[in-house]
Image (cartoon, rainbow, N blue to C red):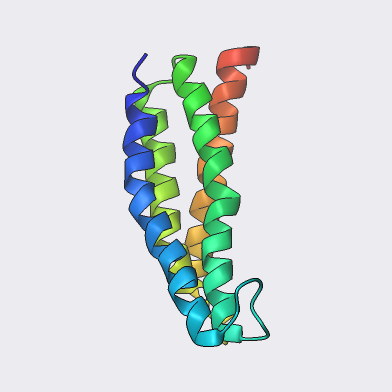
Length: 130
């Protein structure tokens, strides 16, 4: 089994992860902070942008991989993957220090949630017969 859709989504997400990781790593020397945020809100924001990615993407990709392995339809896999990629692109731009209700934050979190729920439902239907 090739896991074509999951691989495609992982390929789309990897550059986003690298950019977010680089944002944290490259900022640390300027703040002279190796671990944590050192009380610097700008560094904390970069850490949270990267952290939110890490909180959502691994489990969602695992759900996608399991769904694809159990024969989920390509449409549902692509829909979930598209939602996840859209969310991961939007969220860092919506996560702001001073603007709690930025629309892209809601787009980012909402699409991630929908992708996870879609994959959960697909797995439940395939595996448990719902």
